[in-house]
Length: 69
Image (cartoon, rainbow, N blue to C red):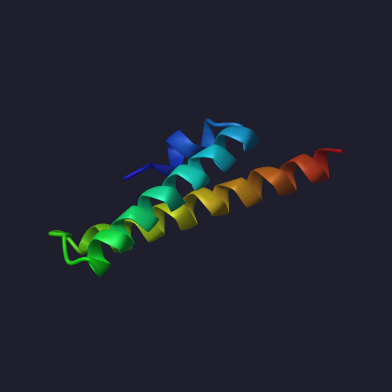
């Protein structure tokens, strides 16, 4: 689980990389669920929430950059 404080320390490029990595991990979990290899289905929910958390902070940083210009 990624904490919001950790994500806020990253720059925009770092957050974009983090979102891509989280989406890739979520895809892997979905494939495990489809092939019935997953033991902990709650990890799908936490992965979705981590992606949402990272995207929210990314949008906040991008809007802060726009307003600073």
